[in-house]
Each structure stands twice: as C-alpha cells, then as structure tokens.
Amino acid sequence: MRDRSFLALCALILVNQMGFGIITPVLPAYARSFGLDASSVGLVIGIYGFARFLANVPAGQLAERRGRRQVLIVGTVITSIASALIATATSLPLLLAYRLLAGLGAATVLTGGQIMVGDIATPENRGRMMSTYQGFFLVGVGLGPAPGGILADQFGLRAPFVAYAIFSALACVLAMLVIRETKPEGSSAATAAVASNASSADGTRIRATLLSSPFLLIGAVSFVQFFARTGAVFTAVPLLGIDRAGLTASQIGYAMAGVNLLNIATLYPSGQLADRVGRKLAIAPATLVCGLAMLLWGRATDYPSFILAAAVWGLGSGISGPSPAAYVADLAPADLRGRIFGYFRSVSDFGYIIGPLLIGAMIDRFGYATPLMATAVMFLISGAAFWLFAPEFHRRAAPVATS
Image 1 (cartoon, rainbow, N blue to C red):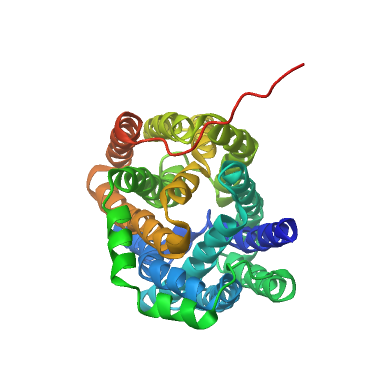
Image 2: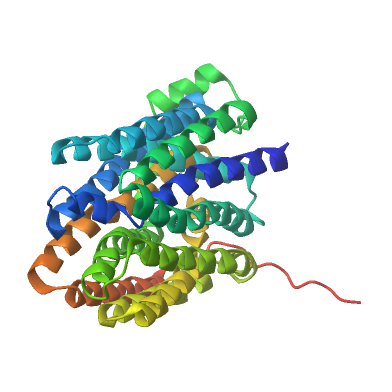
C-alpha cells in the first residue's frame, strides 16, 4: 500500500512539474513583453513566491485536518485555472493577480506532497525516498524547458502557459483517480480539534522547534537556495543570456534542461549518502558548489561559459537535493509534521519572494555581475554556518556485514 501510494504521488508530481518546467525559460521574456524593466520582471516572479509564503502553513494545517489527498486535488485545480488565466493576461495588474493565484495552487500541491512523503517514509529510508520523490519532481521540471522554449519560438510566449494549464489538469485527474490518503489514522473529531485549536503544549513544541538552532540553520540554507533559484536562475540568468550572450529562448531552455538532468543524475546517490552518513555531508558541500555556480554565471559572456555555470549549478543543487527536507523531517515531531513543514516551506519561500525583487533591482542599478556575486557570498556563509553549528539527527547506518 505504501509503495503504491508513493508511486502514485511521484507520478502526480511528475506531470504537474512538467508544466512548471515548460514556463521556466520563457516567463522573464513574457513579463518583459509587457514593457517591464528587470525590477518589475522580478516582481512578477516574486509574487508567486509571496503567495506560496502565505499559503504554506494553512496548507499544512488543512492537510492535518482534512487529509493530504484533498490538498493535492485543490492545488492542482487552482494551478490549472491560474495558468490558463496567465496566458490571457493583457496588463501587469492582471498578470500579477494570476501569478498570485498560481502561487496559492503551487503551495498546496508542494506542501501536501512533501507531508505525504514524510508519512510514507521511515527514518532509515527517508533520504532515499525524498530523493526519489525529488527525482520525479526534477524529471518533470527537466522535461519542460526545451519544449517550452520551442513552443515560445514557434507559437508565441503565451503558448507555454496554455501547456502548463493542460498538464495541471492532467495532474488533478491523476490525483482523483489514483492517489490514496496517507494521513495517520485516528479519531477525525480529535484530529480536527487538534488542527483547529492547537493545545498550549503543541504551541510550545512548535515554537521550540521553529526557534531551535537546527531549524534556523537549515532554514537559512533553504532560504538561500530559493533566493538563488528564483532571483538568479529564474530571473537574472535568462535575462543575462538574452542581453549579454545573445541567446534564444530555445538555447536557454536547453541549458535549463541540462541543469535538471544533472539534478536527476545526482539525486538518488545523494539520498543514499544522506541515509548512510547523515544529512550534513550532503547539504554543506553542495551549498558551496552552488555558490561557485553563481560566480561562474556572473562572468559568463557566451553560450559555452553559460552552459558551464549551468552544469555546476545542476551538480550542486542535485547533491543537496532532498536532504534539507529530510533534515526537517528528522527534527520535527511526527504529530506536528504538517505544520512544521508548512513553516519550513514558508521560510524557503521568503527567499522566493525576496530573490527576484532584490536581484531585479540590483540588475537595473549594477548590472548582472554584482547580484550574482552577492548570492555566491550568501551560499558561502549559510553553508559554512550549517557545517560548523548544525547538529546531525540522523542515526548513521551500520556497516553491512560481509562473510
């Protein structure tokens, strides 16, 4: 039952994220088609993260109260509608409103899915299951950029958003037909009471977890990852490719597809490493490699140097992969996992908001190199702090006996 539920969840996230991958290489250009500067392009990207930031904790609470499956279905419906609306936008206010709605849908899908993996996994296999789930996620994202760029070149910048709406609708059908509930069994009345009126003891436990140094340190790592992903990789890098290197949407799409292929290639080995020797050895070095990618992109002037930076980013983000989520699952009390994951995703999505806004403003003022170098420094500081001060919760696997 657990295996079937997990595979069904992986299939849903694969289909859903294929749609997301399709719009990745064209969203900055689509926003710029409304006559926007880099700061405003950053706003279009960042408002999606703002919606996720607002919705993550309520989505976690809803998953505790009503179940994970309903959260996934609601999220895919919202995402499909929002994507179709984005393709019809005729002004910046409409585009922002529809991106806000899309972020609400994404929060429910991603939070519900991550909680569901936490339900199914055990401490002994959590790194591998998180990496497998993340692998399907990235296969979907990785399959999208190249066809997204081709769709934009052939049919216009609105076409990828129509495709995203279709993929989200398919994901909704899959959730309704195949996904089974993984919420731990118990009295529904008691569960509802806990979800709607958390006891004083639960509130104290949640605050203690959120204010603990391990949560703050892993939150900083994830914040910087999201800051870089949306601010640098989704905003600065495509614009840099167009303005400095003279790349087409298809070329940028191929580079982003290569990033995701490297993510996929490194994910499962990184999950095995995290289960075998602990989460820190996967998280800290990978954070530093991601910083190196920012430095390389800051100096990129042609397609080969652009591809090199993309390859280093794909390697670093793939090695880190699922380990931050596994680390949070290790430290979170099982009965509070939904809310703790909601708060963790909100910390991460705060980076999603700030990244494109700040980096967009820095691009307008200083060009591309300065914001990418600043992001590299953030990776260095967060990775070093996590390595030096974060405790390791995962019990190291015992060596396999040989005869």
